[in-house]
Length: 582
Image (cartoon, rainbow, N blue to C red):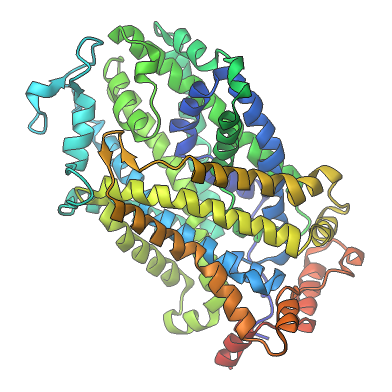
């Protein structure tokens, strides 16, 4: 009986699930990437492909992950073992991807917390060029359009005080010990937020998911009163209709919504596995996706109103300050705050907002890892460690150790290399996820799951998106990325050596490699002819033919799912684990 599904912990209420899902989807990328992509790909005109791809890709795929998680009551690994044993490696790839991202993503939070601590000083430490880390002959307290060869004080603070950056990835340097302490503090915060599972996370998200909106609203009200703010907003929104005819704009829109919503990590699936069986997942999928897109657009108003003000003060063009990524959060906006009244307060609120945005995403990634460990090895692990909290502590400590290379002096190069690898990995895992669920498991089986949960099957729109549209869009992103591949650069000046890109492909294989390995393990572990092994390997362990006659009731659903698992075929991997438990 150890292999039968146990009574799974559920969210205290629907609000906790919604806030956790929105908090996961809405991350720092909504603030520092979307505004730049929007203005560079057509301004207001970009919203047409962006919202189109939200409807064709994001909402259907979130709906799909919610359906599988809520019905199976499993994390990604166990869910894929039960849905399609041949593709069980997809679930493992998702967990590995979440582990890699969780390990290096806290690097950004380390930088954020470092800036937050320094926001209490007056004047702000990145305002002037007279500090020990500055290069006076190449430093400007502010950027002038006639002195663009100089570095701003904020840029030198980021490079020489925070990072102590080296010449390249070939020179890693030593650990930045003050950043090690901050990284450890962040993992401590994460542990105490997730150590009770969804019981503790569900309470923390009331602050971490909602507070960023308070700060964004306050920043917008403050910024629009400043001179030049409306110019920045108009620059952000002015449509360039000719851009709609360029294929790369539509690809960028698909990639932006895809990366932003977080499909392919298993996080949405894992969080939905803690829902009650009759929760309205279609409504929740639409709320999460719309909240994510609305936040991105709203953040664009906030960011570009500040950039417009800064351009007015420094007598620059808006496009000279419009950047994406860390440059916006750690260089441009700190300089904007240095010119505002009560600059310390605004800097503190801004970096606290980024901290909350990053923590929410980390909660979900840690939840995926914890769900995998407890679903797959729970009884054995608990026999050794006695308490589930110790499992979470061990996971946090291991992930902390793997993140240490990113806070060396050359860590920013490692960080960007990992980020580059994850982008490609995510495309592969997402493609195999959609193909497995839509083509092998079958849209008709997904429809039965939806009917079991909502009382009616999905309409033709969702079926078409699952079967054709979404897979084609993912393939389009992947092919475009391969065709338009360029050598990896840091800040358009440092070219990564060839061996570094080789390392990136090794990192990609650490996740994606589990998919063929899992398929080989499944096929070799079975008996019979090749065709018989293949047929058995794609046969789900759960039977859904009778499922529509089952009343939508949580207790009956738990009993029904247990009976389905007990009557269906057990994969060799699960059989080996059961024999070990005996």
